[in-house]
Length: 374
Image (cartoon, rainbow, N blue to C red):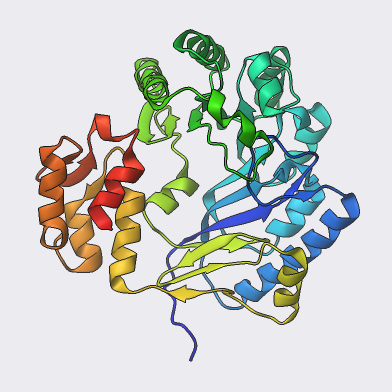
């Protein structure tokens, strides 16, 4: 029996797993770049897109090219991937881009595509830190790179920043943030460095700052960026007014989003699904005409848990009326006792309208949310 899906707008995530080289801290699925392999991958992306276009007749409110290094795609490939999609006129369409690929030639070609937001993998403005992370751009090049983006009309730029780096201090972090602010980005994403066991830099784990220093660095980022006019709207994300990431908000609101590409995961309520991280298996699935591979139909309880897990990442937290309207049950009826315990130790605020993490809970949010829902 065919699943009956609603007609409300969707998000779309497109995964491009290819990289010129693997950064030492990265543990994400990626594939060494070869032009012929990328061309074949794009062909399969278009086939996969067609499978879902025939099944889901829903407009797209957001599109996000993530990776990997999506800026290895040329403009023609991006246009092909986006062709035939029913995009809302105001759709936010983001491309993650490596600073090295911000050139006049690339940006001029990119303007022939619908891309209207760039997420730049800057990570740091400290050369020693960039060397450690095995990033190959130079801090002194970045001002010119941002100026190029502005010259070609990109008015919505997001910069990634990694904190908690080995030997970093509040002083080195402040200098990096000051340099970021000189670039006047509309959005900044701040991520704590984590070194998984399967990444190249795992052996450096003992040189990371301890948890107390990491928490101090996080608090510094929050205070400094808010003082400079950025809205701290999600645990790791800061935006000038009007520039929150609409695509990521779909994740945090647990709204539907389609996912294309190897290893990508999507959510079309009540179905969560994931594509294979093996290129050959991914291609075979498309050849068979399969949609929603490796799918799981979530129970109401699991959907509520996911909703809380994602929604509590937002500074505004969970709206109690919105929760009731969505699930037809009061949040306090389900979790009242646990909420009270977490209130008593200063980790949650429960107001007349919202449930939200306290300031001190933000840095340990995973643990707090786990205590609430698990």
